Length: 194
Image (cartoon, rainbow, N blue to C red; front, side, top):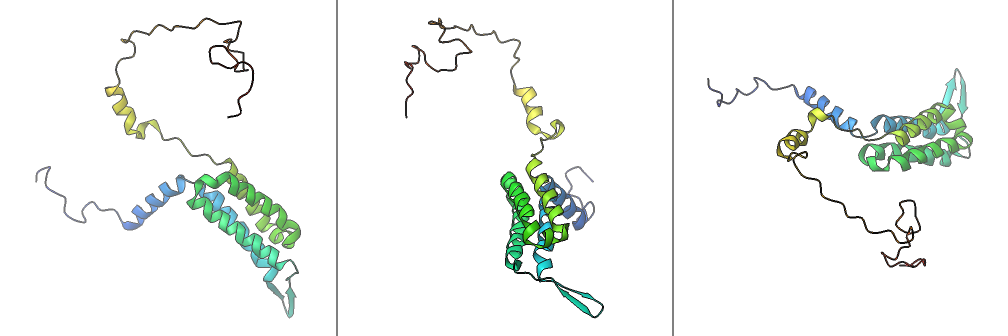
């Protein structure tokens, strides 16, 4: 058998669950997945408890309140914010701050924020979303680094160009001068409006 002979089908194939798991892990690593999951988990108890009926023996405890519509809106918004974190990762700061604010509003509106369960999940998820930052790829995995070393010219062999500095006029080109006024750039101290 030569090196050009294709492998028999099924010989080195991975199981489809392993492929799915690997693809899901790479998808999950590119976005604030856990923050979105906590926010979604926080939205369910906030939306559910005001409409639930607890049965304690023969006693039925109806927890529906006049703020049931408000708690339903808060719960649905939290679920939508959590899902949007999965698919629109650039809204992470807005979604995180909005989740924190909705969690705080759910305390007086939705039975203490879903008996503090939904409140804590939404608060933790919102904080995770605000603090999440995209990761940097490792150097070993970047293809451009191996090509960059070969294709880049040797920087030490190049001669440095001489820098020609314009003469400073009355200290206007001083690096500490932040006024932007200089005879060189045509500004005379007045701010231009456009």
